[in-house]
Image (cartoon, rainbow, N blue to C red; front, top):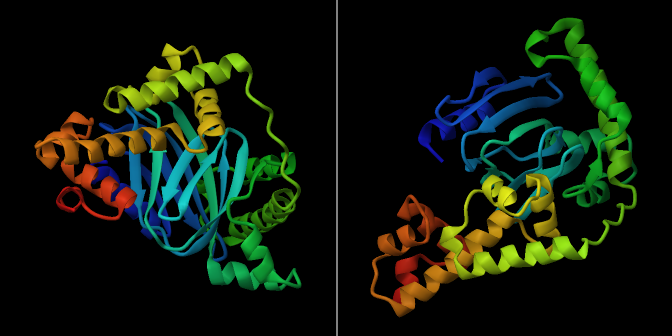
Length: 303
């Protein structure tokens, strides 16, 4: 991730009201953020020129994320989350770093509605007998966006046209209504997912073996999907269903495993190993390696 894109992401997280275009060399897109005093909204519409990972340090908050474009995925130190088109989910941010993965050439569109954790707990205390139990149940809950919520979000219109007064009051009311409907949907029994067709399972297993054999030679997800005659969203969803993790995470894991072997079995420098695994920056390899193994590559080699 380049420094300009990193700065834009952090500026969006830190600024209560902002409308900003993404750097042209990295993506086509625009992000708008607006705080109502009760809720914080962020509208994201973008298409990156290549597979891109964006990182940032969000505040401690309860977040409701709506995905209206292609699937989106993000990682924290506590695990990962994935959303498909027309899905929403509740996320609890503890303030730790988040990393989101965007496929190159794919249009992304999603909206986040968030509240500080204490404010959300106080709000739930007014409506439920046991807000702590509710808070423990919500994080990670995925559900199809209800039709009434689609309509409410559509009725809100462009965030850039809301500047206070009665429009802000109307916005708060529609968001509270949407939050209520989403809480009901999230707490329902989840729908069972269908099993993969045998042909699709065979293709996913082929891709998995390809990653294991040559993790540094795996192309961008959009290219991989074309090679195996799948849509990006189907490949992403099916791979997670078979392997339990995202395709991106599986590639990174395979690269790190190969890197660990090279650290022990070869005399190549850490930089040479990082480059052979497809890392543009050795520092990113070291960061991923420490996250996976708990120590830096040099320490792993010495131990």
